[in-house]
Image (tube, rainbow over the protein chains, first blue to last red):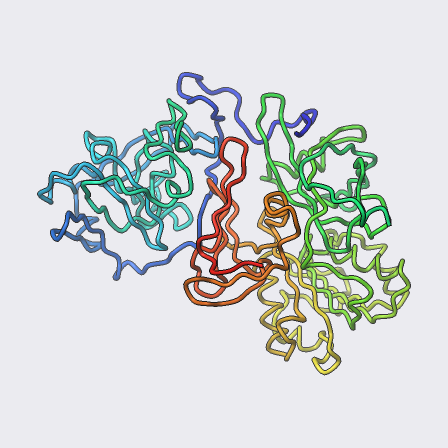
Length: 200
Length: 248
Length: 81
């Protein structure tokens, strides 16, 4: 039980359009670095990205990946730790175009990353122009601390689903909980329904 | 002793600011009044929680700057882009309240019975818990020899400068190194601590010294690696890493 | 981003376990390395606190605050005491 500290506000920006701020969130101008482990540094000549379903998989090297058509997008992002950052700009390859390369009837995806991080999503949430493998942020190459060389970007879900240092998508018939989901976070994570923890 | 008889459940409580002392342009000591404070050990820290009116919360850990038996105090160094330190060093005033949990820490602690000779290595605001140890050593009349290696960016950022001068006059060896700007006429060390500097400053391993290193992770790891390379057993090197925020 | 060490979680651990934990010894279930909690590599900024083995970086301990209650997962340790 802690008292209110007179005059304490934190670093928040007060003047954001409330319609863009999900319940329980506050807007920040910063881009906080959150991590569950050390920043990996996979050399680009060793980096690959793969999409697999059962025994089938397709894989891209970094040059092959960067040769794919990419998009620039602007999105609001919402972290389960309660900060939101509005109007962030990214450059990335739409996940739709990557999923098109594999024949599957999977319903779920487990994204896996350098350093061992994983997160799970319904496959549908990676389609319809709602997800990217992002390699650029704010007009620059994505920095390692923010997930570079490439991270998953799924802005309509809490940002722990936008897995940093992503190396591939495992398409699955079952919904296998990823890292934070295993420790009690929500399997889906819709910020507008405030689905932070399992059972919300 | 009453303290030993009580088994307090460690949880958040309210603390009141009694006084603030400006140590440097960026660092301030905050003296706190904590109900039922059980006393603390030199090197321990406490966790501070600030709650805004709308329920927004931020938590940080700060080393206790005062010796056992003195009023509880923390020293906070302001980071320009910090969230908590600008508030604590600029806005907070006597009478204000904050959430507090502590004291905590049992590893990074020195008591006179632990002996010496002591090698204390401070990187920036890592000086805070080591200052508590030096105050405790002085107040308890302990005879263990003590040597402080203190790395700061510049003389203006040396915290407790006058007190360290007084400790030096009382027999504590204080060795400063400056990493950005040295004072005019400075003939001492003017670089980041490295293995060579440690080799010149550290007690010989044969004297069974006890080392405490506190500061940013890179500083602490350089010191720990360097001392291990000089033959200090791992159990005689205690480390406490601060984050880039200066606090944890 | 640099890891901190187990000293940084002295408070949350004391609150959960009811006693000082930084001097407790943990054994990594992945590599067998034995270390005091103070020697764990700790990542504080995140949806939860992750403490990793200072040797092999395997996850030893995860603390998550769920609806005001701190839950601690110790599956990465074969022992802690």
